[in-house]
Image (cartoon, rainbow, N blue to C red; front, side, top):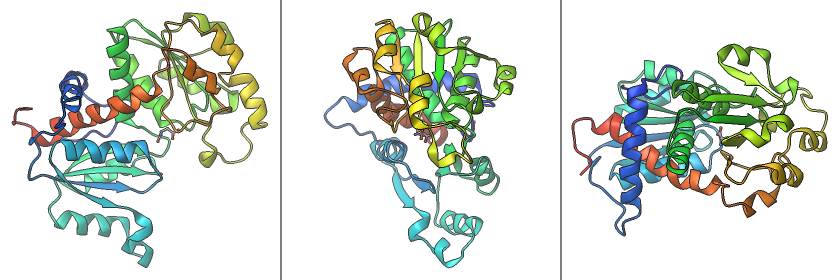
Length: 305
Ligand code: ASP
């Protein structure tokens, strides 16, 4: 594969290779030196056109741990403020010699657009409500390390599915690996067509006891037009993972959240008291998974070392 634009069309062999190599890179990250020469001489452009903490830092670290040079671009401090178009900006940055582009953008399809206009390897770091492939990969990697497999699991995703690229990428990924995906959330944030993509729409309270993996989504207030939920309090009452619901969650169930968490809205802080809450492990594993993606797209013939 030349690019990683989405999970829906991604090659399953590629996804497996990434998950396997991530295990090697995680070991590298546990060594005192943490660094490999694999991408020495390569340059990766980080285009983050929408706010990001984890994903941006994680990609930057991943590229640096592989010895690539990185150039960071943020629209607020660029010539886009002087009216330069997105495409002109891209062509100009590309002219400086870029091997890879990591792009985060609020418009669905932005990564595909970049891939059509550059010969660099493009990685989608989240495009609007469309997809966030490396998040789904790091989620899968975390589950595989904890539960030892990716197939035959029941994965429940709760919340604002409508606006969630994380939910979409995870749905495609778990279906590819042969696991069952359940969605639960307010009807206004859970369109019926998701069922046609292979997800089952369920009542959260009825399935809590039987899930292997529970992913809580952030209530995405920045993508909401109109009033899709009556109030934050109501949302918490019906779909939040409150202290009471946490008590009903089996100890073995992995509890995940892609971050940032609205504590006290979709998830109560008591979640941190259970051993199988793996939110920070997801973040830690994210660096290794992104190293693996960069390695497979940019190093190609070279050995991990
Ligand atoms: N950090 C994730 C994303 O960028 C999830 C979220 O923002 O809710 O999609």
